[in-house]
Length: 122
Image (cartoon, rainbow, N blue to C red; front, side, top):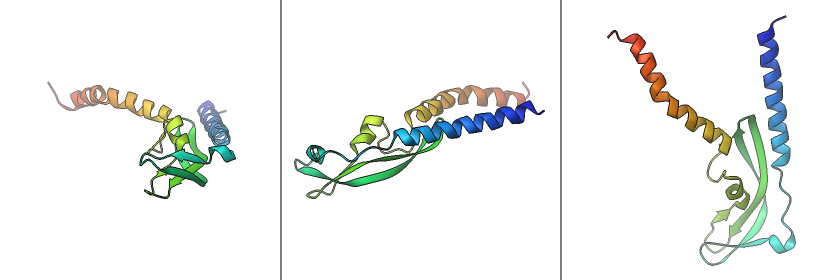
């Protein structure tokens, strides 16, 4: 019995299950008829166009988000209100992944310093 192989297989399975569950949770419904228009920053109105898919890297793996898309016919600016709500606007990284990356980045200078000390005799 190879415990490490079992651990890694179980971890991969749980990550896949988590990504599948997140994908299911990130499937948004069509907006109701009274929610098919939003104000646009230009002062006009953005209208609902359809549902659009977005790939997202999460702490448990790749997930897909299906959310409403709105477009202003006057200025041609598109909006994904759900992206702002979920803090995934203009990124394909979930807030959890971004937080993990920041934590690793904060450790990098000390890791690099420790590693460089072993290469250079004092």
